Length: 356
Image 1 (cartoon, rainbow, N blue to C red):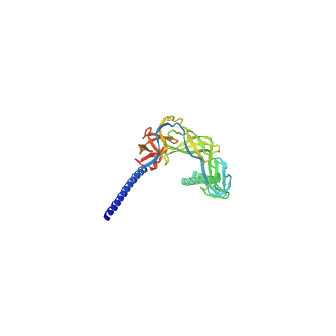
Image 2: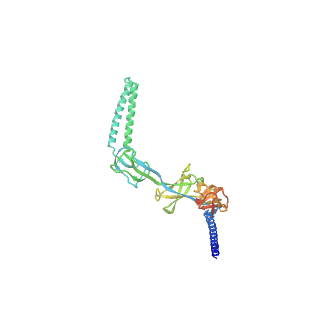
Image 3: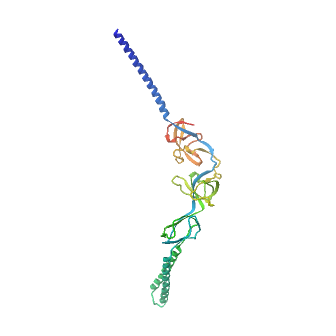
């Protein structure tokens, strides 16, 4: 009887163990299935997409930049001396040739007097040698030396005359005194900065354009110019310079000259609006995609193309950029689906989940 009870207990225990094993295996299978589902979901990168389509690029494009003075000069001293008078102040308008400061010239005038005396003696000596040579009293070499001394004496007088003239410091360009570095009593040497002069009667708006945009521009072409501080005003500019070489960002510097009525200031931000009305491609339908579709910027020329929720890194040839749209010349076709956001998490062949 006792052995029968023991057997029953054993059978019950085996049943419990078998049930536990079954439950554990079933739970493990469910967990593995859930992990597989999660892994599959984690392997999909969430992205936004759009389709390449034909559209008209008949619109103006713009480029931002800053206004620079048409002329700008840090005005230096040409001689050494002490400043006697400063005749202009910051903000004053000066013209070419106008005296803006004077330098003490007492010592220079003494040197000038000595040079003039030397010249007078050289003239007298040379006349004596000229007369003596006619009678054979001096040699040709002695006469030549006398003539040379006369020339040197004249050159010395001219040099001292230039120094005397330089004591009256004159502006070499017309413009406004933007900065004054000297005061009466200041001691200057050749090259010492005295004034910053800027000519803002005309300003240059300095902008950059892409290679696809520069082909439609030419020197002398008129451009609409806007200033950020004058929202209600438009200015007319003229292209004065187009760089023959691109900068480090592969854009081409362009300068636009704008007449100024003193409203604009050098250093202000401006926008050049280039019209496409004369463009041969104006109004023509072109295959375009958003600029945001490009991997690492438009210059890379690479986009992720989506096919059956799998992406492929594709090289395209780009054309004109207008606003946020970029013309596609080759590489993809109308209706091709491209990724517009989420590219940073993608690699060639990755699976994606498209979010509209």
